[in-house]
Structures are given as structure tokens and as C-alpha cells.
Image (cartoon, rainbow, N blue to C red; front, side):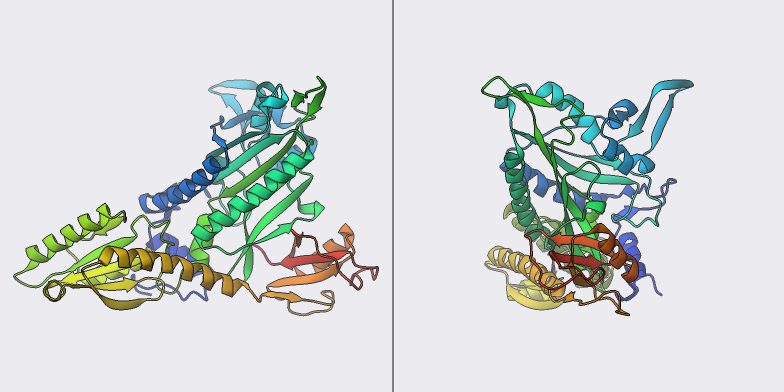
Length: 471
């Protein structure tokens, strides 16, 4: 394989790894496995995702915080289910210099046990509620499976929102707001998704229930986020109470909402093609790259025209790069195509004489000649159309992949997403997982009633359970 080639997308694992490397998204050579270096281009994309998240958080009244990375074992151990769920995944700090610590510390795998001792100090009265905070930080989990950039790593770029409410109803309203935020974000990221209520054996440690945010990528489900209803499961061990109007003290009800750099991995895997990455316009470090097509004796004239066009488009609000490197135009095309720049403008002497430019769309790989006059308005429309096209194309690919299966205990080949009648018993769900070598995604976020019987125990079905192979 030549340096300017990628494996075919059908060979997904090799294709994905090659894109990550050749597009300069991260460097995996750091001497701790699963802790990768964010390189400039990849970090710019991630910061764009962070910016969209921050806008939604600010719009909905969340305040940004930043908690310490280290958590005392004494605080971590207060919620029994939580430490049971995360204990095997944490990194422990046992010494400070040559001194052994009296209380072991851990690098946060998530921040409930870091934040909630402070919540008990911050919340005193019903007037302090709701409390809505978020942070964008690194979390650390000792991942034992094979690592993969952005999808399965040991240092995770992580968004987490934590809220506290007067009662269960207030927490439920927060979850509805979280789902609204999710819809807004996924439209900008051009990621279709489904929300599943995780089965009890797979819910977040300490949660009353968990919602998984799932997308389909190369035949498998990738969880790109989660929302958790805690009820008062954390407020009781951490003594987070408020005084109501009658002077009575009550425990708050809490929720969390989390997403990670897996969003970046989903964008690569869902939108990319045999030519490389395709970035949604909102995320692209450069929405437009201008490539000069020099003509002997007129190089300076062409470069000057490209620079002027770049300045004009920046003033119109676009993120633009003019590529003046001493390389052949074809090499520049490849460089920016694999990095997923939405639009490319090619400008040479003939274009200048005709008052036109050549436009290239990365999502369709199509070229068109466009008049130079009114170009900015035309580009705005094109970028909006690229965003729509990427979302609709991905949504269409995800639809139609859920198949109703009467008896998964008898099938030889499982569909990408399998829907099965279920009695609600854990042992029946686990039996279907084991037989089909899949994971139970859970039930639909909006409850579904099922007729018929559970294929494992033969008793009346209560709902449908969804299964898929996962990353």
C-alpha cells in the first residue's frame, strides 16, 4: 500500500487506524498504552465539539466547574454499588514522594465521589436547588481490552453534567432536558442515535436507571453517551440534604449526563469513506481550504488572488486556510481530503480571467464552477447542505437495521440490532446475550408493550429487549 492510500472502508479496523494516523488526529506513540497525545488538528476538532456542548450547557443554565483529579478512597467507598462497579478500573496513588499515604487516592474514573462531598456543603435550602453544573476534564480507567483511539482509551476526554433537585419529578424533568440537549448536539455532529434504557445488570454503578445513547457504526453499536437517574442513591451516603419550606430536611434527587471523545470516534467511523475523514462543517478546523493553481510566470499573481479571497471569506465568517506550500496541487488535494475539509476552492489564472472559482465538496466528491461574485452566500448554502446531507445519509444507513427475532436461541446469524420479546427477568436476558454473543442494549426509552411470550422461559412477554454486538 502506498503512503497516499487507505485500506478499503470494508476493512474497518485497519481503515479507522490509518485515518487516525494519516489525518494527524492523535499520536498513539506515547509510552503509556491507551493514553494518547492530542495533536493540533485533532485537538481543534475536539475543542469544536466541546464548544457546542458548552453552548448547550449555558443555554440551559448549567455552570462550569473544574474539580481536582484525585479522590480519597474514603469518599470513593461511601457508595457501595459505585465502588463495586468501578473498583477494578481505577488507578491508585499510594505514595507522595517516599512517604506512603495514610489514605489512598485514585485518579477519577468519573466524578460523583469527588463532587458530592462538596454538594453536601453547597446545598442547604430549597432555594439552592436545582443545582446544575458540568465540567470537561480527563477521567482515567484501566481499560483491559484492546485500546482504539477515541473509542477505547485509558485517559478519556470527558464531559459530565451533574444536577441536584428537590424530588424525583424534578430529576425526571432534567432528564427530558438532557434528551433535548442531546438532539441539538447530534444534529450539529450529524450523528443519528437511539436511546435505550439499560437493563438493571448493565446500568451505571449506583444509578436507579441508566439511559444509553447508541449509534450504529460499521455493523456494531457504539455507546456515545449516557444519562443516569440516581434518585437519592448518592445523596443518602453523602448526606446531601436541603431544608424545605416547612423546615424539614430532605435528601436531594440527582442526575448525571456524560459523553466523551467517543463522539470524535463516531464522526470518523460514521462519515468517513475510502478517501478519509469527512468533517461536519461545525467541527472542521478549516471549513474551506483554498488551493492556488499556479501558472508559469503568474505565480505571484495567483497567490495574491488566493490570499485576497481568503481574507474576504474570513471576514464573511468562514474558517479558511490558503495552502501556499511548495507542493503539487494533487498532493494538497489528498492532504485536505483525508482530513475531511468540507469545501475546497481551486483558483488559477483561467478562473481569475473568467471571474469564477472551482468548488469541490468533500461529502459528494463533486466539483462545480461557481461565479466569483456572490461566492460567500453560495458557500453558506453549501455548508448547510453538507450538514444536512451528512446527517440524512447517516440516519438512512442506521434505519432498517433493527430486525424482529422470534427466537434468538435458535438463529445462526444475528442481525445488527435484534429486537426480542422479553418477560423482564434478568436470567432470560442474560441467556439470550450468551446464546447470540451480543450485549443487551436495553428497552426503548419510551416503553413498549409486547404481546406473545418470552422465547427463553415461555412466560408472557412484558416488553421488547434490544441486542447488538458492541465496541
